[in-house]
Length: 154
Image 1: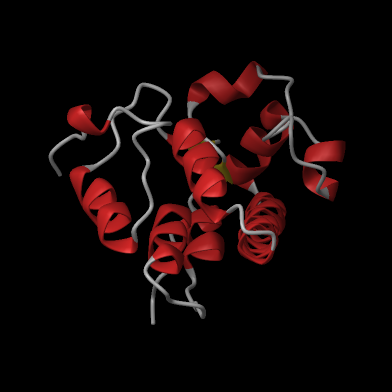
Image 2 (image 1 turned 180 degrees about the vertical axis):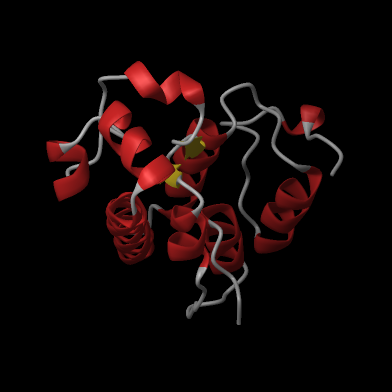
């Protein structure tokens, strides 16, 4: 299948897909990249070396409750344990995303879920055109949460 990017999962779910299988969360962790609501956080970047925040302050996983970005930065640049911690966080993120997505469908609030997700991922409103087109096909109006006239070309 190979659908594993968070954005792809939300879009494909809107189009009716309901099963996903991909190595993305763990593969990207091996490169020191964490999944966060705003997209990705590159923990190998030098800016992370002194950042005392957790990977994602809104996340309640063991990694975010225990370690700072600076500590994980040190690990991902020198030790395999860093990749394991980021993998744990990324899998937690994906499980939470899946649960929240599922709950929104059950509760009939999926369009609102999509809007909230897109607003976090694209705070400047630069939603890719393919996402706007997919939401239109899925019958989900994102104009209330995103400036669809500003949909960026891929």
